[in-house]
Image (cartoon, rainbow, N blue to C red; front, side, top):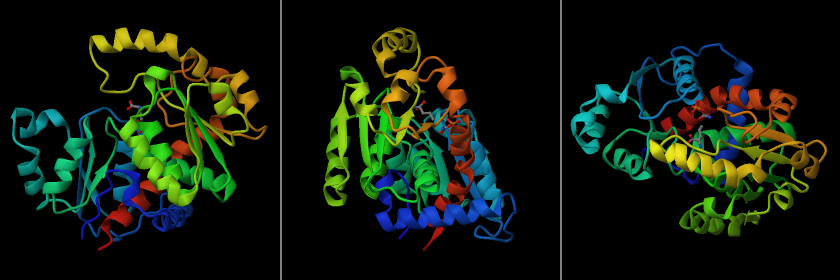
Length: 312
Ligand code: CP
Ligand code: NVA
């Protein structure tokens, strides 16, 4: 059966552990290509309906290092833009590519791609979740701590795609995750139920709160993301963006929040960052080595994800 990565729970806990080992292997190899490698010259399709710096570039590089090549299709160039169904496009692309990497809006679009493609479909971010980033974050945490159980990750900010994938990834590996958001920006409640069901099996504590200080207290990892995500478009950005900035101010990662966490706490950000909004420039500078290592880790983790997806 083909392997789609639409949400983190496509992988079992032991598959996530293997992903960590394989990412470490690829990281140790650096930029040494592996030819003909896993992909043996085969093309992989990239279709991104939103901007991307890290995800697109790291997938393109990963595909090259695995001996394949990427075909990048800007959304305005495809017939989808003129109404051709995803179902037909997915069927056609299944004849051209070994896998598809897709960044889009509604999760339902990804589900539609996966349903009609006979090749693996990898979620490169949707409005709902960002599994590839969350797996990189697990890898970055594992590099530092060598374990997940007993750790507390505190995410402060918007209950968005990143918050969703971090709580899901934490639940799978048994890491405690607290999500602190304004009341109006909580994670999706159906998603929370799904994650809690996973956590019940692994004993991970998943906590949702509107209290940023209690969330940060004794955290091993502090994490944040932008307050306004891609897809919150047009007038909504300026109006909601302003409202969000007001609502979100107590959730900024700053010296006071860092002081609540453990003294050696990691500070993480998926990037892009807005300095002095969700994180102060000072905290960002002090933790730049972690945050940019996290960004660097996208490459070996994408290689490991492609390897997982291409297993038959
Ligand atoms: N973190 C992340 O996914 O970055 P991009 O939007 O640049 O891909
Ligand atoms: N929540 C952000 C993540 C960017 C990587 C967004 O969706 O824009």
